Amino acid sequence: MSVGGKPSCARAGDLALLVGPKRRWRIVRLEPGQTLQTHHGVLNHDDLIGRPWGSRVATHLGHPYLFLPPSIHDLILRIRRITQIVYPKEAGYLLLKMNIGPGSHVIEAGSGSGGLTLALAHAVRPDGRVYSYETRSEMQRLARRNVERAGLADVVEFRLRDIVEGFEETGVNALFLDLPTPWDYLEQAYAALVNGGYLGAVLPTANQVARLLAALEPAPFGLPEVEEILLRAYKTVPARLRPVDRMVAHTGYLVFARSLVSGDAEAEGRGDAERTGGDDVS
Ligand SMILES: C[S@@+](CC[C@H](N)C(=O)[O-])C[C@H]1O[C@@H](n2cnc3c(N)ncnc32)[C@H](O)[C@@H]1O
Image (cartoon, rainbow, N blue to C red; front, side, top):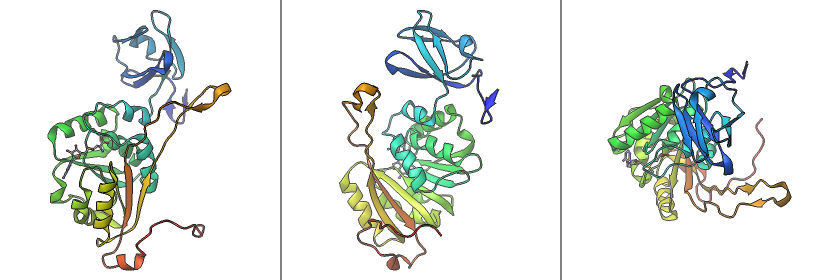
């Protein structure tokens, strides 16, 4: 039986999420004849292949594990990485903010470890495209491997290129910069974006944000916005519901702007970019 067009049982080759005692979790690809060694005993892949997702399984020592398909959120947190990645809390928000969905054509630079690439590729499927630029070949290899492992390679094109040389594409819907000096590439970004398209960037320090805002002022972009996302998790004990003791205090600042017809930026109303209520869609 399948729900929503997806098989409800695991097949050989699928990625599986196994959540054990104390919520320790692993992601594995199911391969006939293989075993998974855990701190709590061994699980045989052959016992998992064909099993319904959502089952409880037990190691040879009798410890329980939950057996689930992993989400993109899970995959991003567990990719092999040698750079800082865009975390799911920022990635999920920027997809909505930049209107990225099925059919969108999106550029990102740099590829880094491919964390954001997973979120973008998952969103633009089945008929959109992600063009991912990177200068370092070892980074590109890692990003490609992570994207292939997640089964998303069919919508991603990797380009080994310094974006100072510009982008190969034009008319893309959205362009996201995750590199240290985004202000150096606004001309290139503008040339690649469709009029009205979305520019986004993530930056770790406020100094960099100020520099990017200053560079956006004379450029043909409008509606600049700076946002920060704070996420707080809670202990899920009904009788003692409260936040967990520690939280990730800072990941990065998000900066957004819209690409305008050259010359029309003056009319857009710069300065304090706080959005007012506005009218409903009519
Ligand atoms: C922070 S990482 C990107 C992380 C990625 N967004 C992720 O989620 O995994 C920044 C990457 O930008 C690349 N980079 C820096 N300057 C670049 C340029 N001018 N053109 C292309 N890539 C560049 C670096 O090599 C590095 O891999």
